[in-house]
Length: 319
Image (cartoon, rainbow, N blue to C red; front, top):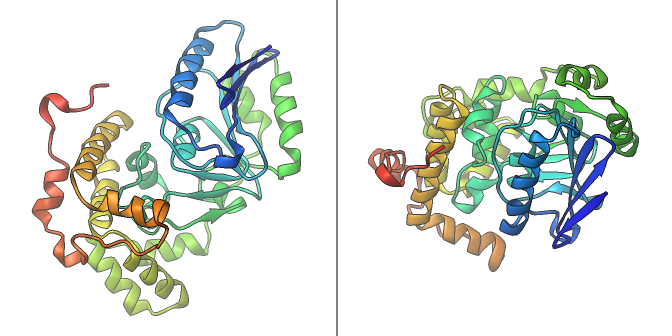
């Protein structure tokens, strides 16, 4: 049994498994509001359905799981995201908060929001500071792209399989009888890794401010450090400072508290200049030359950042 939601997202019942396929391959399966409005109630329906034991979510085509958009939430039943391809923005939101995230050699993971005058949303303030060392801060500030097995090695994916095994993996998952989370965990094989990237991030990104990180990178002088200096210099200074504090604050918060904080930040970005300018430069005109305001880190006052985190009163997100 399968159903369509404007053909952009497909729902299928395979045995006792609910399968969601994001079906916009030409748009890298990026989420839109219509898709979200179909996915959310279907997830709720399956969560309450005694004949649905497992949910699998995947992307159509061979390039992307999901490259953008936004959906958040919690789920009681085993939830397996097959992140075989580009996984950014909304694709992260659809996968990272689930119990099982299966990467392949085609997986490309990034949170590139500082490059468009935004911040890592979809709960980035929750999962990024919980990565080892300062890796989460590094990923949040630079938009660095993790590829393939590294996505699993650092903990963003829980498991890794070769891309040509995804179809058989899905079939085997569907064949599990009334699986619990522990059953699915036992089915998938976990790898653990602490590597050079982790070491570099901890050493260079252990700092009390974005300015201190820039100093660390300049003093280090390695090819890796110089590359990150160049990358950070292209990002919105306001976004860098917002994101630095977001990761600091989020380390001590619950996911619900993080989502309230991120809603406040989203409203601040909508009131400002850089998000609109970043979208223009990167996505519309594609000149890759955003005019950030302020244009330097020193031009971003602590008061301006503080205001972005302030309560919205009655307009605060209610969860």
